[in-house]
Length: 275
Image (cartoon, rainbow, N blue to C red; front, top):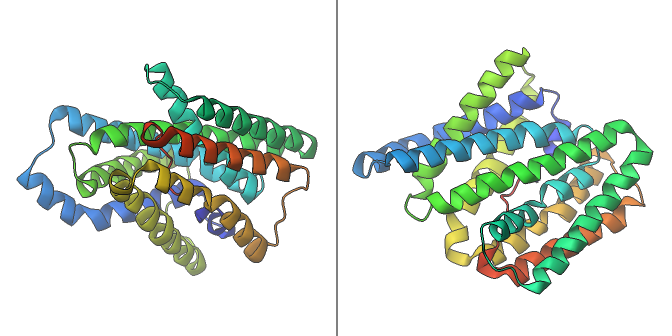
């Protein structure tokens, strides 16, 4: 549910992305260090954790700006298309995909076309936000698939600690190159950044990484889909933001398509993290 809160923050989005990962990494570091002392990561495991962190950083760098360019509802729905992209990657890797999953993918992609098609008529700014959110969903697929592979052998705390640290370092470098300040924000912005970190980073990403291996990706994926109407409702309450009426059918198709993908795909489908 971080999209409505992100839209309220006046601080630059790279700063928001950096701090939510940096604070998350700082909170996990003590536990991660203890675990890594007992069971160090192999070179391959460490490399995969770093690569997953790079995908996470790129995901935030693409998606967070979209929240300020298009509606929160459209941005959240498009970034939540991650299960569609993970399914396509798994199919390319040789996994069998049930027919109902293809139906869900088709409906979801049709919804994407409808949302972006409507926003073409709204403004180039809104279309740019849609495309960035869609790219964010694709990049999250890399983060999710690599993370699923690593978590077969590495604890959530150790994995997330390395992953968030990598993302924070890369986002800090991007901010320096772009000349984006990482400090000097207002008190209200700092409170919102802390709220985003607590709700989305720690209760979202970290809990997602922990429970997906126990309750399964289907249950987690269906829960994540609730983020779309939830974010839209919060955007209405906090921002007075209502998506264009013609966008609603596209959002419904995306949600319905994703629900089919997650339910029909079962354990073969890796879902995306709570944003």
